[in-house]
Image (cartoon, rainbow, N blue to C red; front, side, top):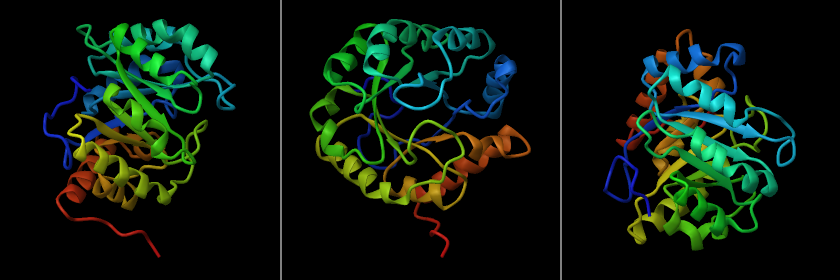
Length: 252
């Protein structure tokens, strides 16, 4: 059960967290990018780790993530979109790379689809000093992770199929978010719900927030703004408004 979240109140209206993915960033200037994101007021920074096996793309190794730590004091989050072999053999390195500026646990997200022994992986993340979390691809039902919900700090609902940035949001994931939030409330768990994929400061983030998500991964939906601060502020405002009942409808 989570010990790392900002709120000890399970259930609805947990604090909104804006978490940019650095996938759209200039990788040759990643240090400057994470520093600029910190100045923009983000809550955490996500590194999308892809190995060309679980998803058809290649991105960051643990060395890149570790190198970014000296440029900012924002917590890191690592989403492991990798095969079971790479998850198991590289887990120690990614947990270490994700630690906070004062050694606090970094969020490390394992995909249920990639890990036959998910219980073992999540336990190892905790034992290694990380914050264990789990991700579900769009086709994967919540039922697949009910038996490990007491082990995780975050559940990430993918609202696109993972592998590439800039994809269109899949609105049918809202029922999955509602189902997870209801389970969290009924079982008095201290777990955040993240959403990732096609999230913008419009009806997408609004409806996800109304459904019960409180952590929002935004890549192109944040980097498209004239300044990163504008993007962060807009995303936070729309999500907070939705938690307070001002929910934007899907365009017809």
